[in-house]
Length: 141
Image (cartoon, rainbow, N blue to C red; front, side, top):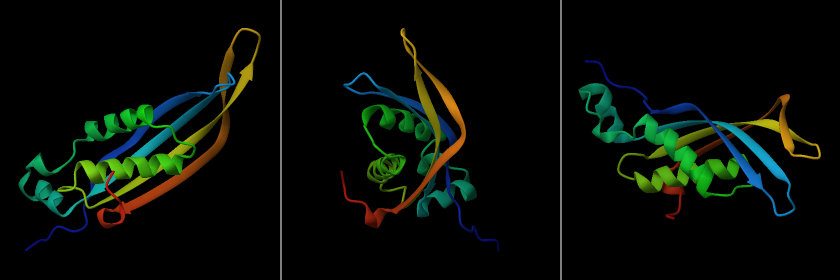
């Protein structure tokens, strides 16, 4: 008889842009691409029976990234990864036992003329953060 091996689900390539407006008038553009992989012991039923009741929908993963990005200020993408992990582990404790979040940040530079700021991509500069958290390591919010 066949047995189900390691499995996870989630959403990748969730692109988010956040503009942080500072009191001194400076604006910082943060562009990230997020991948979320959720693991849980009850999720295996999806692959065996086809019942999706024990998984978090991929659109929920995507929209959660957008909401958390808007609701929270963060100074580093690693911090944003921890915010995402805490959220899913606290919101879905019966389904999610472990979460892996990978965030890729593209670099932007701002230029200023007399009328307004405008932004341009720096190019190949990329920052990567990976956060992996299990349910036993995260304090409740």
